[in-house]
Length: 495
Image (cartoon, rainbow, N blue to C red; front, side, top):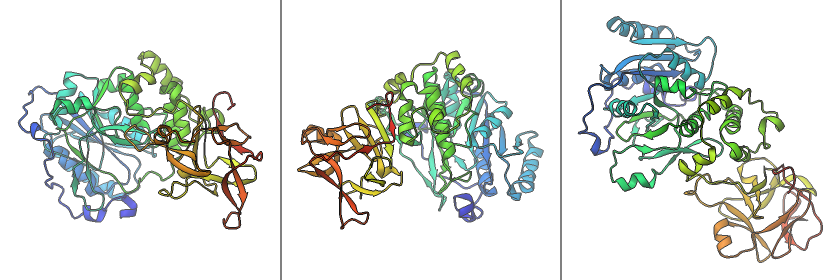
């Protein structure tokens, strides 16, 4: 069951559907009063082959912890599940519930698997309340979750609001997540961020937190969601759609907030049920880059190690984005640079990169060996069989630095590692430290030419070695004319 669901389905079947969960709201939330005239909400749950007990617990917690006058309906979107339990048994539960409240639970069943993105939009289309909450069917709502969200959206319909705690996938315990904003890295995977300084200065832990992006589930004014362009239905399965929505909302005049008073716990699965193949995520990220990221789209291609202008050069078919570009024009949205400067200043920019590759900085002497960062704590680069993973990711910058390893996505992360000549030995040292200490971190490099340290004049070369299993090792020595090649070169193909 764990392999099938990505969580402990056996345990879930043995837990009560109406179990109590701890109230994790900050103190300032508990005595707040809300207007009686808040808008109603439709809650949408999407699923494919989910454990029935998990779906039912999600529904029970929605009914039990949402004031009945605010909860208009629950919509279940079944994305073509093959699990028989989700047909007859679920229909029995729906019929029984609807016999007491006619039409309260609606079921939308897809005849083929559409993926998470289009499933959310299916649920939105079936909803009729002024506000729609789009959730996975593995959540539990905490007490008082709805009122603060509905009030904020009533005050400003262009707000979109996500909020999460965690349900541990193995024990089903509720784990409090620290208060945080939500962001992403250059592959467009989500990540949690420290709340902005402006929020800390307020000294009020119940205050809304401005967030550059959203992690997946969210609540939105139903008509505003349509005006802003829903989710990009040209994307496949899942991945990147939440980042795209966050960028689009900010660039086109809306906002995203995390509300500490509105707590919803969510199972972060051990593995995804749709697919383990990430090709669709790379494709989705490329769509976001082409439509919304202007001159920064190269950062997404660098992070995924695909040629600049993905759909032209790499065989990735991103589909037609003309309607998304037309949407951006119609909404008169701001630039991605504006978004980075004003909404996501924590994000590191890499506009000085002139060439990049993963598992692709090679010497012509031995074409199957690549420059590799080596064991993490050694800080000594090595030669290794080319495999294209993160330790072989290389970036050459206009400042003539060679970065090896993953790009740090935000300024709060550890600094990037640079290749440095330390007394004729190759080392990997944090770039900012090496620059501050005036170390030898600048390298002259042209595609198909040598890699020469600007200061020491020594070249990075391969020398024969019986000690090394591959027959060669890296050395810094007097230049002998060895040639190096990197896969992707920016700026009109010349270094």
